[in-house]
Length: 113
Length: 112
Image (cartoon, rainbow over all chains, first blue to last red; front, side, top):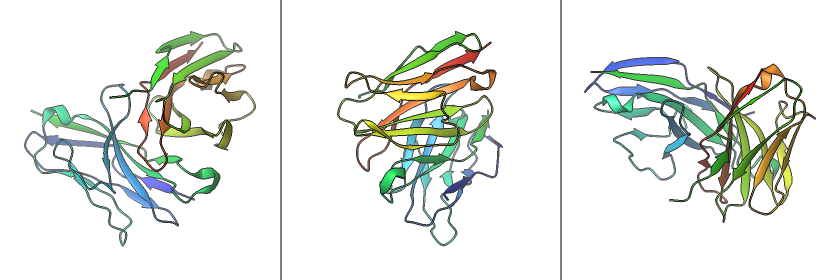
């Protein structure tokens, strides 16, 4: 079974401070990991896919298969980064479960001025 | 940029009534999904749909739920007899093969 764990429900930092949102996963195959962001009850927006290895809005995330982690990092947080962040894993093994996303519980990030 | 469109944005219904939530996926996408987010909880998978049939459903997706793609563009979620615990935000999503998802803005369902 696939599982995603985000251990921190709430995370508060001050503007300009580094931020790291933790995500751990369990999955028997080769995972595809995502970070989604949800601003104030809006739609879920894709922030990062691990396979594209790009940086969006200054955020990066590296897949660590040894530690089964996909932590989201930003060196200098901004107030507009305040939002709910979800880590998600997609089943790419094929078959009937192909494409299903499993989400973590989410972390509410608050960046104080 | 193409979007997934969901209507209505908010629906209030009485317990026991039927509701239909509508979604227009991105036109060249082949995989369609419904997810649910109860207030304060995580986003949960409900059902995936491919090639005009359900490919997977969760234990939440019981007999009171059904999905349809009636006309090749809309993708609907029907809840036959709503319960209080069905109150949630319902998100539709679509994707191409092995590409990222695009989510709709959601329908907030309130059952009273």
